[in-house]
Length: 413
Image (cartoon, rainbow, N blue to C red):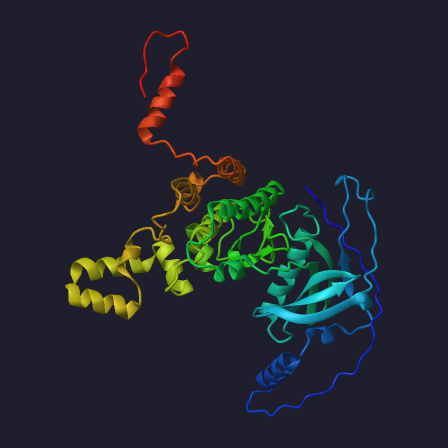
């Protein structure tokens, strides 16, 4: 198992004076008042980098080593000179994080800052755990289709991760600019191959991503895709038979939604949804809320409600019931985003296999890469994508294999 080594370093910062901000209080609870004041003060800061001002921070920088069994081989201590980190404009944000453009040691970088709240102990522990896990995993991964980790620092209330800068943003941003169903088969295959190769490498390292989606796939200047955001990722040996909801509902596998034990096949399901996005350029389960999409995929309680509406009530009450729960009747079946009629049959088949309800029926990424490379070769040679055999042909092929070459029994296709 690959081991990660982290080294503490003392880094000198330029000290700056912070202005105190006094805010009116409307809360009678002193603890709540303090929490609200802290939140408002924090949110009012133009740049979270102001909170990194300190004499010492915990730092990590990427170091690569060839022999995991020898801790001394390839070990190198780095001193992070954050005086060379220049932070520019914010270009993305989340509930507890902001991402800035930056320059680090004369290199364009993305700076992800995570704000850890002082008052909410549960959230603080969760964010710290995610930060530590993301740094540990990113620092051991090296692949053309995985975003490259450069450095990290930890100074509560702000944690910072520095990675290579991906100039073209997320895959979701790219697809939002495209007309529906406008991507060529060649482009779909190129992007899908980048993603699947990155995921194949990730799984080969024993890592489950658990939040694969178009918003966590980044594009560089050459329009190559790299897998990013490992905040919810884990080693398969450490999260084996895990339960609970990780990731994002629209891309989440049914077994994870149902909080059943799951495996790395949850990433394959998510890839199936992403491949659907590439073929349509649409948001999956558009018109549904994330929670509605989750119920549709998992076939939970609302399936019974839908059946009751459909069979126990007349058409008027069926409509009332559906409007009451804001849930369409078609979710009584295994809901997946609708495949377009003009979708390549070969791609449609692969998508369906990836998002199969039974995880054991989903292929692994080694198989997916092989299939997509075959399709890509066909497109480059001007050949049609191979169609999948029907059940009858599969049986016939197997029957042919059972007959020796010298057999006199004729077999007709």
